[in-house]
Image (cartoon, rainbow, N blue to C red; front, side, top):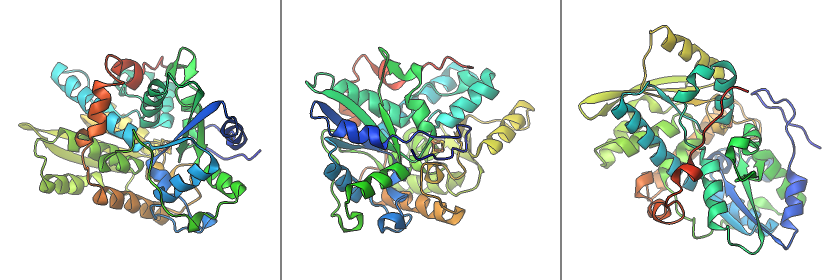
Length: 368
Ligand code: SF4
């Protein structure tokens, strides 16, 4: 058993590779896999690739050869998160509820609030993380399969293993994501399978969930969630507006960033924090009245998920190169905004009809 170190408190992290080989080899089981944004830029020399290069197409090709039945991109789940989180923020503003709204896609941050600031849990978004939203949609979509359905998520993150096992995220006692594989575990499985990764021809994800936006892909880097939500909320949908959002202070690897975004007649004040020490300092500043925000994005790992504990080790400058790889993927994407993704709209009129709260939101019980 290989152990990995998690920066967020869980010292020994379970290795799930053997369990996944077992489910793949079972003909009675349909194994579906989703791949998080940061993973595609985290494959390095250990598979003959260059850190920061987007090798999503090769990851898909490798997973297909390893025997996964259906392969999807977690950015589809991120598009759902953008729409739900933007709605939640608008509703809070309209109801004059307590602000800021804190993001909820980082499970280590959610745990931190539960353990250290339970008084703030009601301000943490009720949105499931992209991994969990997509897991629920996949389980629902394939619920009539004659085979047992297992959902695997390839994540840059060790804390996602604990998130997937949380009781609040189970439906009828069954998790929507059955196994989380870190980027490092994926690399291990590719090596075990004997696949020559750097010689693979890139392949595309499967249908019917094969469409996602650039807004979803930047979730993997600090500031990405905020930028995606602002794109959704902006009245002006032009390319100039996209550019001004990007250069309004939301990008860059700094541990704390602040931005003021034009919103109706006023401004939205946002803060983007990576690293839990920075989050704690920000909470203290807000409690003292020194700072006020409408929306706060928190990622526990410095630089966001590109620097997650499940990724191959990287120095800060290498994490920044991974971030650039995600912005480049966004730049090349033909769909820039989550609400312009036609798949998402069809999900709302299909599998999500009458089930938005059940499949896309979570009620955290709070402090343990
Ligand atoms: Fe996981 Fe770190 Fe990303 Fe949080 S910031 S979701 S702990 S990889």
